[in-house]
Structures are given as structure tokens and as C-alpha cells.
Image 1: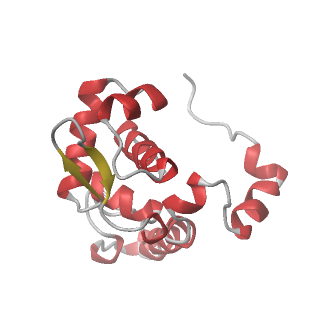
Image 2: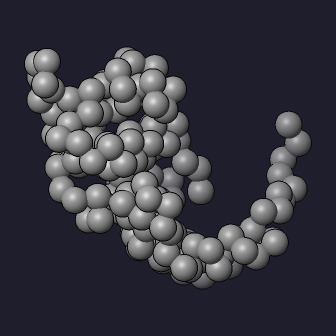
Amino acid sequence: MHISARVDYAVRILLEIARAQADSVKADVLSAAQAIPPKILESTAAELRRAGLVTSRRGPDGGYRLARPATEISVADVIRAMEGPLASVRGERPEDVRYAGAAEPLQRVWIALRVNIRAVLERVSIAEIAVDELPAFVGELTDDPGAWQRRPGPPA
């Protein structure tokens, strides 16, 4: 799975807002806290606003705030807001892809992949990350030494 820069920025923006526990957080504070260029922060925050994850207010007391409690925003919500479905095959949802012959079972592999992605990303909230209280299953998964090992990929 590829996590785009847009998704990474969006999650980090939400984490800073959640951790601040203030009425609102100014764009320059968010930008400085996460080293996100101001123009990128503004465009990312605008997408988060359109997705209903943040609200904003202009003026000297303005800034960004979460549109709902951080406990109710999952990492999956952020990815869907920024990129669309968690798993797609050639731009289609796995359940809509059809294969013939030897590749026919491949659709079930893609659906299983989506189930596993959901099993992690839908169960981790912005609030849990912001206070470094990740669900136990994340620790169990990352405690496996194999989780940290790189696998051979294509030559650079």
C-alpha cells in the first residue's frame, strides 16, 4: 500500500489539531509544528474541510478545528477523504473486478487485502495516535520482527 504525501500531511494536520485541545489552531502553527509548507497545508486543510473532517474560521481568532471528536475520526476516514477507496485495482473497487481463467481467484486476494487494510486503519483513531495510546493490536503487529524487515523490491 502506498501512503501519499497528501494523506501523510492530512493525518499530521489532524493530529496537531487533536493534540492542541484548543478551540482552533492557526495554519502557521500547524505548518511549523509539522514542517508542512504553508501552501500545501492550506490546500490539504481545504480538502479536509470539504470532507467534513475539519472546520475553519477566519480572522484573528480563526484557525482550524476538528469537525467531530478525534475519537470518531479513523485513519481510514482520512485516506478516503484524500484519496478515495482504501484499496482499488486499476481504479476500480475489488468487488467490481472480474478475471478469467487462471486469474479468476485473484479478485478474492484483492478483497482479502482490503479487509486487512480496513482491520487496521478503521480501528485506529486520530485521538489514539495523538496521545500515543495505540490499540493493543498495533503493538502486537509491530512487535513481530518481520514487520520491520524490508523485502526485496525492484532494483532502484
